[in-house]
Amino acid sequence: MKKKLGQEGGNVIVTAILLVSVMLSLGFAVASQVDTQTQQSRKERERESSFNLAEASLSAQTFILGRRGTGTADRPYPAEGCPASGDDYFCPDDDQLMRSYEGAGQVDFGDGAEWNTQVLDDANAAGEEVRFWDDSYLEDPTWPRYDADDNRHVWVRAEATVRGRRRAIVAWVRIEDRIVNFPQYAILAGWVDGKNSGGHGGRPLVNSTGSLGVAVRCTTPPQSASCIDLNPTKGPQIQPPANYVLGYTGFSAIGADELQALEDVAKANGTWYSSCPSNPNGDVVYVKNAGSCRYTNSAPAASGASKCCNLQADPGLYIVERGSVDFGGNIEFWGVVYNANLDNSSSQYLVETSGTAAIRGGVLVDGKGGVYAGSSGDNIVYNAFAFDDIKAVGTAGVVQNTWREIVPPQEG
Image 1 (cartoon, rainbow, N blue to C red):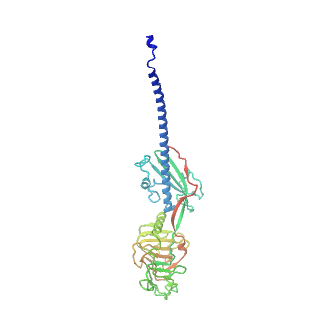
Image 2 (image 1 turned 180 degrees about the vertical axis):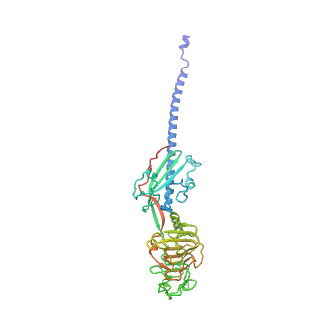
Image 3 (image 1 turned 90 degrees about the vertical axis):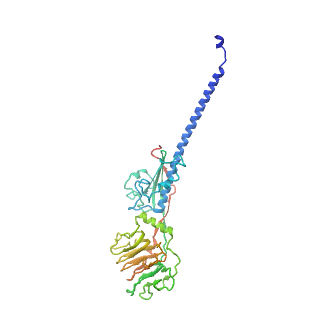
């Protein structure tokens, strides 16, 4: 028995077991380290994914601000934020935004990925300017959700949550206006008609003094029923008598993109209409399918005025995409009336003044369409101020050094 106990056989097994134990310990340590690093990489990836989605939603909201403006008191950005409010005009489209963040192509995204944007003025309800963002502003129900102080700046806050990782960023955004330059004619149309048998004390039907004149796309003879049917000697009906241009070659007064930009402004301001509105007052009024709009003394006056339409100090722009408009009674439209005439109608009544009504600004009709200049005198009178401040929204961008990430309330 003692002999067997003194034998050294089997020592190799003990050594092997010890070595295997050491190797297993090292293996488990390495595996644990790899697992920890993998988890850290996953968390970092998820944080980056939520950051990328937040940044994309901020960019999408900024783009909308640059196309559709900052809203108005009557049509502000939604207090619930986007996309929760369901506003399909001021909010980025969720489906479109998430096309680049879908679960099939990127493992972090899917049904659990969410984003939110908020637009607030850079001044509170009392008009006090704010140049540093604080999330407490979101809790103030009186905080304007449009550019109330009219300085063309707003705050945009964007937030995203991906797999429980929440990131939020904010930026001070400046909106750049786009000036829309209409050619400054008293009338620009396919042709012009008017019925005036007298001079009405020397008051012409069309007074283009100070403008580029009257421009028509018809050619010769100028004084005829199919071109400029205004008598240069009676009254004269057109003043100055020789201030006209024949054979105007441009089909439209402005381009399609500018027309779309003005339509966007009208939608943002709440002055876009599918058919004739009862109220033609407004900075930019856009009528999609007018049919035959007619405004008389019963049309509402603008605030501060005794009768329709707009104010001398605050002229407007009335756009008809298809159809015609007639200003009658003794109302005065201060501003520019523009018929885009997308049907290319040759009717003489696409823009008309009747009774003793007047348009004080300018009248522009695209294509072959005509203008009926009325019969009472001083029916269309050029006013340069009406052309001076016609604006759409051009673009929007983050003010340098204002973009920053907000520490989220929870990391998830």
